[in-house]
Length: 76
Image 1 (cartoon, rainbow, N blue to C red):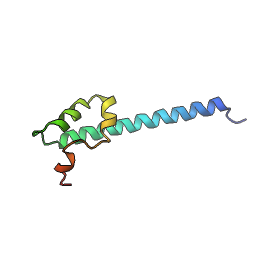
Image 2: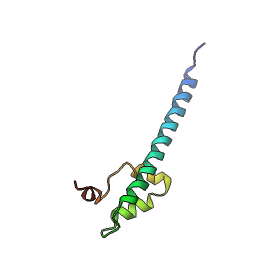
Image 3: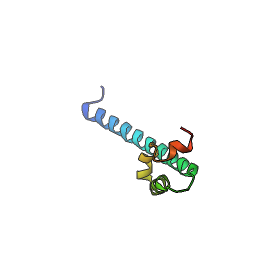
Image 4: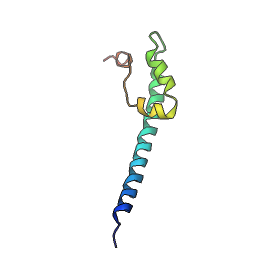
């Protein structure tokens, strides 16, 4: 009548995979937004990391991070 244990794990796994994919896509978009906001003046650490992070797998993680001089450019 209900779902057996294997089906419950399958549904949970699918939901987890979809959630990770959505968070990665959001992180990648955030990374692009942060790259656009970079000042492109020395030091270039932030700009290099953000540019390398245009690779979607990397950008999905680094989009959620604050790197290098980003705080100073926002006046914090």
